[in-house]
Length: 361
Picture: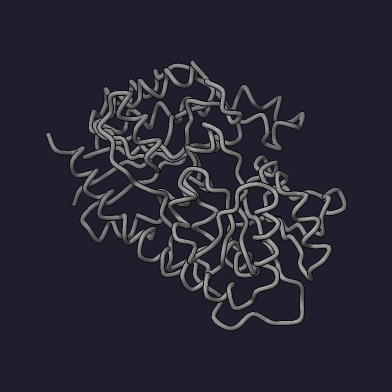
């Protein structure tokens, strides 16, 4: 049995929940046992957008928790020597601009696999972030293999000097599945969006089409995120629901169609299409801007629509709201595509081989 140390951003971090933890069982079946070591506190806690950072208690405790976080990550780096390989998701900390911790990790165990699923060398507005870019390039250079979530990320990893392997973000099609029976009729068609509060501006890029379609059709926009906005502040008919891991599948199944508007920037072209994959796995037809991997995921139009521009978005939303037969057919096609192309079962052998290759002298 091969033993791998898996260093994640936190127990509920999306990177861990979708790109690491679902692989534990298939990797074990393949002879690879992972020991998971999540960041504590989670890396998201250091973001300026995290709600903890708006409290006086958190600001007072920040220094102490930073010390604890560094201590824990240093201990994780030191214990890495006892494993056949290490799988590192992103970088170990957000508040160190250099790769000193990752250098210590690679010194303890050079059999390192670095997993990247976003264009982290850029800021979310698409502008360069030179210190983070230099740090990530150093980590890629220290790693035997870089697992990259899409071709944009793979090209960056190769340019940074790493040996890159394409590993799309998978979806656990055993956990996320269509509702077992037909949807109840009579209520409004639910056009759903699920994601982080910080990404709500993407949804607002189609506020005009949403307002017009929800006004003339019996339709409502359902927003699911960790800190849902007040529906009264939104310019279209909306419901908002707080996200929780326990209710994630239930909430996805409450959608009649899923939305993923996305501006075309260098940052968004590094996205891995997780929203779309969740919709497809749940048997929900989707509409998304044709940016980055979105075009590939919805290629051919059988599982959803790829509108460009406000008029096309309005037409797509109108079709999703009005055409129940299309929603049913596209939902079935999307589910089949998720199982065939993007499931954990499809990509677990690729990750297993990357870990074995990294462990080979």
